Structures are given as C-alpha cells and as structure tokens.
Image (cartoon, rainbow, N blue to C red):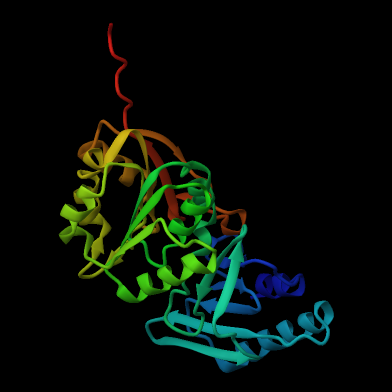
Length: 309
C-alpha cells in the first residue's frame, strides 16, 4: 500500500475530475487493488479487494493529514467504494457530497453520483476519447450508441456537431444525460432514445446517415451486450450508417480482449472500413500491459470516388 500512501502524500486540490492513483495499471506492485479519483470537491478511493477497518483508518489519517497541509480550513470529503463480490459497498468516510454534484473536464460540466452504484456518471479513462470527439464533430450528424449519461453528446455539440442522436437502454442514465446538456448551455441539437440498440435499428437508420458514429458498449452486461458475441453484430451495421468518409470511434474496456480482437472482428464484419489509429489513454491511466487497458480505435468509411468527366 506504500505507493498509494506516497500518492496521497503528494495530493493537491483538484479543479477537474481526474484519476490520481491507478494501481490497476500494474505499475505499482502490491497496489493493484487501489484507485484514487478526484470528483471535486470529493475524493473517491476504490478497492477491488476486501479491505479491513484498520487499513481504512490508516488511509483516512493519511488523507486528513495531507488535506490539512494543502487546504487548511477546508473540509475533507471522501468516499470509499469496494468492488469485490464478497464486499460490495459504498461509504461516505468524511465530510459530505454535494447534491447536485457537478464536476468539470476541459470546460464541460457533468452530473456525477459517487454514492450510488459502481459507476459514477463519468468514465475518467475516456477523457481523450471525449477530446477527440470534440475536435472531430464540427458540422457532423453524430450517432452515440450506448450513450450512458451522454458525455460524448455534450462534447460533440460543444465541438460544433449539428445533431446528436443518443441511444441507450437505461432510462435512468439517459435522464442524467438530458440534464447534462442544459448544464452546459446546450438547449437543442440532441435527441434521446431509451431503447435496446438491437431492437431500434429502424429508428437509428432512418435518422442517418452519420458523419460520426460512437460505439462505447459495456464489455459484459447480461441481457444487453456481450462483446465476444455482440460486437460483430453491431459492426456489420456500420457501413450502412456512415456517410462516405464518415468516422467511427470504437471503444472496448475489457482487459481480456485486446486490440487485435477488435480489428479482427471489424475485418470480418466490415472490411471496407479503414483503421486509422488507436487513441492514447490519459497519462494517469498508464498500464504495464496496454492491451489490458481501455481500447479506443478510429475507423473511417471510404470516400466517394471522384466522378470521371
């Protein structure tokens, strides 16, 4: 646990949501179970293994001592979450969590809920993917599949997208997504379909074609999406959804499946789409085994052949 304690000893107040310590990346031996995130004004410490009360007391003392040094007079707000089958819990350890709780990232604002559920409303490892969408959405009609709380939609519209169609079967997540838009001064341009994607192809197709399609599914969610059997079904649809020259952002956060899996699936399902690049992950998510980390790939549809006079 020493590397985590060292990270806490270097802690500084955070202005934006970000990862502070990424033990899951395997670069800190003995700390693989730990992650520490800033969701200002709250710190969220996550363990993927059971933790005893004595260990939590040591970590609380370290956080409290550092916070007294760097933010004298300010309350320490921190939440502990354990994500292990034998000890699944989320607990407020000190201070309070604002309600509503709004965090920022590169000028965009998002609602988060760090005391409810395992996912907090904003996936911090996708920060570079959101930045890429912001830079490539100008004047595009965008399809955002598995939209969750619609963070991609927010940054696409901020980047000049003319329209974004958000699709996700979770009505609760989509409701938060609908709140995220006015939170950023976005009064229009987005639509929200709370449907099972595989049962909504008619609506999705009729709203196209699209200049940009974002595919960010769960890696394994029983009854919704299982990457090993469902990703290729979705890939087969992509050529018909895209404008000539349109782009796809293809995402996968399954440690057991590598980039080669995605590329092979795409080669079989939609060989006409051209692989362009894998986006880097944020530096805070550096991983000893990059293929186990988040994979975000960019593909492009072929452009129309020039007309021959």
